[in-house]
Length: 286
Length: 309
Image (tube, rainbow over all chains, first blue to last red; front, side, top):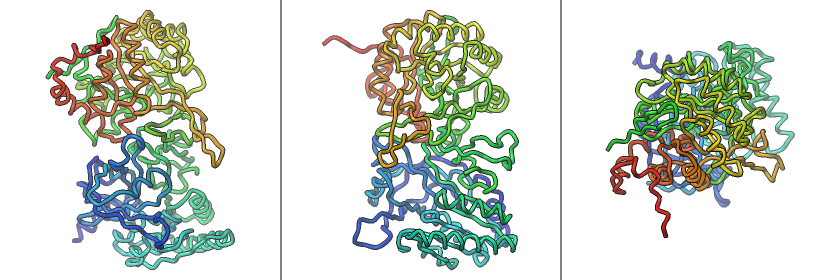
């Protein structure tokens, strides 16, 4: 058991890809709508058979391309791994465009092509006080994070969202840690959310803790600014448009800063899919 | 079934173990795909476009999905030829499959310098001369739209890399692609690959902005296959040197369509994004598809399109 725990810790602690990614065909087990009923649902948990890779790290993602995309929707969609069990992989998505609309039509038994696990994950330091900051759909990789964490009592979460809380997989996180949630449908509430982020980050800076954030770009920019001001160790997970997910299309690049560890790649473009999606906040320019 | 193909050039031949190559810019340096298949099973790998010095490429957004295709305006981001020769090439299985270096430069002299550098590399089997990139300001597609310029680039590369097979990649964004093909053949090209992307554009009516930072970009994917097929057919009839077809190829059947109109080999491009094992799967299924169609010799099948009504 000790060596198992040590292995998990070592694998997750150094921010490296965990397993050799491969491409496989998985079966849809079910598609569960989230949120209030009445309107057409826009939030879904997609439960698939478990892929044949066994090691992964929360924060990593997969490229998912259902057969029903046909030829007209050429790209797979990058999705954070929400959760893995012994038999299933769960992804979570919001209907935003034609790809996710087509995904919402999936039925049990349908086939999807999945390649992964891709990119790197969030650092996991069981003994370090860790603050998770999630904006909207940015909550998804944290479901896996809190369930894989060895000492969840050292983890807390602040969750800002626009839609009703029932749209998001908050219950899966609440099973492990309490979630502080703030809904910000109005502009005034946004200021309150930003203030709360700053105050919580200050606490973790004082405790020499760790801050991990995932959400829309303006939210990540705010977190990045506070992290620099407060001097707290902080990782952010970027979401960008991707065609391949494996580093080939060069569509998802982001610019690094002078803090990037490799000299010749400072202030250069790097792929989010292979160098991220999780980055140290100080090392990328948003 | 013997799938090997020899692209008989005017100066140098290129022997491929099978006719399936991966297209430049869609397969990285090959190393990105090692967990999805065995690189040495491919007929060849055309690596991401190399320039003399590292290039940062265009700003984002650089890619956008379109119906049955995609637009890209990456702008030839790459680490430069030295980094390729020192860091990537030694890790590629060049003794088992053909590594083809796609090259781009902003001037004829620079093309020659780049070609001379790669001529020294044992691991490089051929050069693919990119006279057709629509996404860079200097040179780029201009070389591929002016027969005289394309010809001078081709002959400069030919002279600078006497040991390599020289493949010239043509743009479809021209009035008469056969004319371009004849110019590069006359200038000493060993083979021609076509087509590069079609210049295209996408806009957002909500934000009233272009979808790409570069405004325009290159269209690729299944959407362009009929255009590519037409170009390959026209080029194959216009020249004696072998033609390598690409544009929207995903399956063995697609590959055979290009071979039927005259291609000796094919390249898989955007398909590599649609599933990372696309080129591997195509290579593996090709013999069975040939058998089903009663094709026992690919060489005689190439260009066997019947035109009589």
